[in-house]
Length: 340
Ligand code: UD1
Image 1: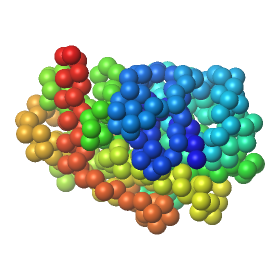
Image 2: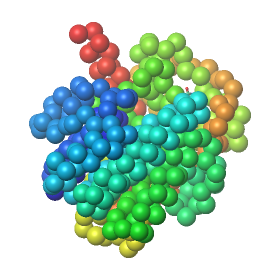
Image 3: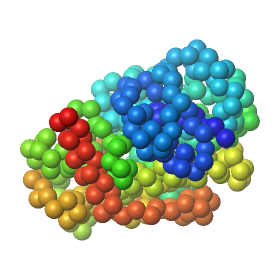
């Protein structure tokens, strides 16, 4: 069983490749290295002992995609990660997001249709729920998106749903809450280019001395300690959920052609709790101060995950401590490899 992973050198894609191989799948992958590096492929080989079948393909190039599929007749299913994901950047450059995230998904679906490949797992986000009362389940109404990035995820889900109504296509859309942490080997992890927007890379970069201090964006929210609450899910648990989703599709466990699942731990943690957990597992005192609220942040969110537990037979196994410990190990590995 060969699975194509688009965006396989990215943060979640690379961890998913490891878990697919662990589960006995053959994998091929494409990427354009827009937000990742080729050496991820070497590190995947170190972890799995396998050379990853890789081609540099940009999903905006529909001819390249069609050619790719015509040369790989043994692909059974696709896991589609390749996309841009920075909310702030999407506000400044909306067309970049619509072209790559939406246009790229359409190109992929056209190429899959031509090659008669009927199964796809789509990388979606809890951002589609906006400000909803947690725990958030999959039946929550989807409001108007609050960023072009969020809108691309909503639009892609709609396109996938429409296409699954029209042709023989089976879709699982996975709505991730906040992916954090890294592989135990510390050979792969999140690699933000430039100043990180997300909390955990900012914490580890501050602790290692790359950033002076972390600003906590507001402590006057209506939450127990005044800081925002999120559902932080370990990236390896998230990767394993993709294997479960692929098995769900290939074993035809679905009851409709388009299925959507939340992927989270089901538990919320505040920004201050995350900082405290990081300090406890790393033994580092983190320099931080309280700043003003960041525009667009929702007060609190965490997932209701019963659907994934019941239908995918998947549950998270890793704790926030595991996430912070591996994120820190990864940051230290990056520093050591810079020295070499
Ligand atoms: C963000 C995106 C979301 C995307 C997800 C991918 C926004 C508004 N949302 O989620 O659409 O799917 O990343 O991982 O960008 N924080 C600080 N200081 C910092 C950085 C973050 O206090 O320097 C706080 C934030 O205010 C928030 C929490 O940490 O309360 C988590 O922030 P972040 O990691 O950026 O994730 P989200 O905003 O939840």
